[in-house]
Length: 96
Image (cartoon, rainbow, N blue to C red; front, side):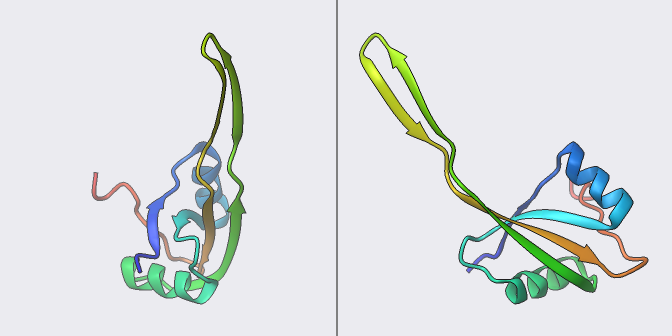
């Protein structure tokens, strides 16, 4: 099972990484905190202090078109906010 899907790079996540040493990742929906911690430590070679998880619900949308009412939704995702030990960082832009 692939636990880490991708890092989340937004303004809020970048500010959080600079000020609080916390990094955000989109993770597998079935992964728990211990698995996420082990995956981040193995992938980036850092020590993790704390892991917080968020289940993001899908957004539902309704459009009124010529052919009728169209219903749709986005996928539900799980986010993890990982706080690293003091003095450690992750360079997310190294592989670009």
